[in-house]
Length: 456
Ligand SMILES: [Zn+2]
Image 1 (tube, helix red, strand yellow):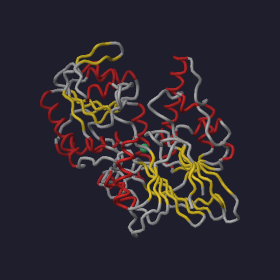
Image 2: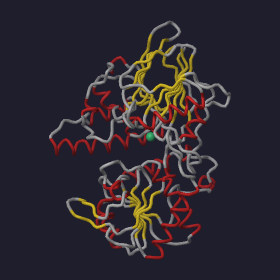
Image 3: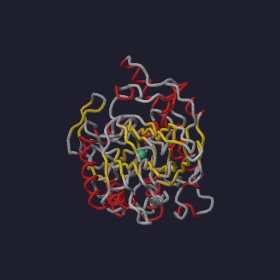
Image 4: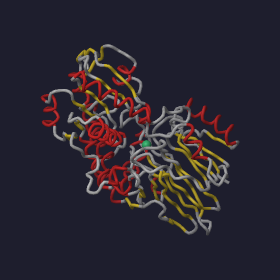
């Protein structure tokens, strides 16, 4: 087998791995595992636009771990450049990928019009992507060639997320995708690895240990109680997939069942509203023993306090609703979207609470506020920050150093002979690699962009 890396090597995004593998007759086949977009630059930026180092026409199938853009965002480009095989993913991953890729195309078309750049792919390529999708369930065997078997396993990262195992040439190779946090209330736990020779493992938080999950409820409850007392507004910039749904689940329990308030919660993000509907549609993929699933006729993630504001008019009407109120809006890093209008309106008010529940990249307004800047520029306006800010780290959708280490060490006791680390910036990977070499005593490789590795 020969494995090469075409993204997410010394950075967090752009996941794409190419595997050459022989069937029982010795014939070589070529498969891709994820085909993600590089983020943090323009969608039509150089890294996304550059041609693949392999010929997409020779790739026979693609296996997609989950619907985040850094794992599926270059699929339409692959189609545009001649890929004509099947794309395998779970049913919820398909529904969520459609939302993600449509949103990316929309942003890209706007960017292209503004700066006159070319687009990464056309609408026809996007539609063509979904024509090629074949949905696959967890543990369902995919046998693309004699002696090659591929399976999807629960990753516990977002709805329908998977890690993927490949059995061929007498070896078992695993692609982690993104591995979820421990004890996520709404998702099944990450499935344990039964056996692996080689693992390609993400290391986004391989250098960190998250705060305990119980702390997120304490902090969320504290923020809610403060705005209820002050008659203020609680602003929560949220990421559409997974974190919004976890937040809704936590808010439902706190507001309706514990704090017993009718304070309205506005979900003010068309993307998050649509993603939440996918979570309702695929409820059988949620954690089966979760209390939310045990209530008959429960409309998942819907509760008395929640109001979904899909249209611009509905969004603007939030202003007329007296405080206290909670507004959940994108984007999560406060780099665009409806949250910007709410920030302009409510940041100068000392009764406002701003709750940050996700990573804030350098240069974003979110990062500036998080670091304590007292004045920020939004849409050309200077906005004073008098709102009190709090951050909750435990909403992370990624496993930390302890979780990843436990996952890599299979229950049977057999430690993989080789581990490749992807995602995560260089520092995170170096720290995690050293930790794994020490803890597991195995070979850990930090691959370079477009490097090819023989797996023997
Ligand atoms: Zn992800």
